[in-house]
Length: 254
Image (cartoon, rainbow, N blue to C red; front, side, top):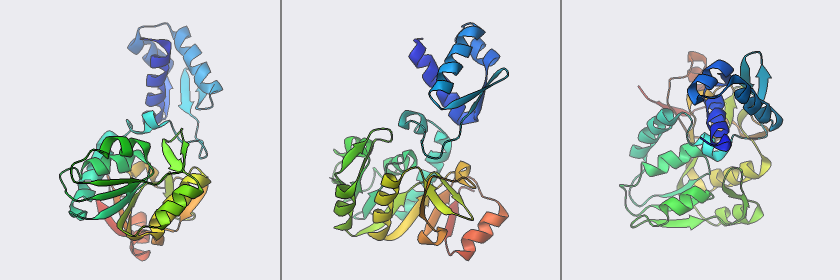
């Protein structure tokens, strides 16, 4: 395995478990512990990890989301569960707006069996993957590319979104908490998502269990700005009560 490939796998381990152990990684990759320490030193210099005695922990940074390649391969089981819960809500002929999140990408894949869907998205991956979907109309928001999240953003994207009216806005976020509401990592990303919410009859927030009680750098909106919250694990009773108070319909894997 090349050095870059090994470091990518270590980064994925960090984002999945929040910590790694030098001895475990040394045994897994068949390299010396000193080699692993150099890998962790590199990750620390990149700003994604903090070295500790015997390993490293993930460095939380609400302003810098994990690389898209990492995000789409993290908690796959949870994202698939969320996608399966969303699918029955969407009907043939619906117009939907979908953001750049990896969770939303899994959700759209679960809709392939439907015909006549109009998909409006700022996700580069979705445009490439669903552009040839039979009977679908796939529309790009336009805008400039934010390469770290593979998303089209900026005033052109927002203006384009505001010209449409759709049945559903399907979004995810960096975190939700009872004090700040819904948050994400950058102002550009938030502006696009807020435009999608304004252009939809109903907003569905796809929120796996790791997002609860997390913050983000920029506020996306209040909890009562969304109509449905779909998650892969039942949140705490306190969260269930809060969502009920905010009139957000909770949909969860049983």
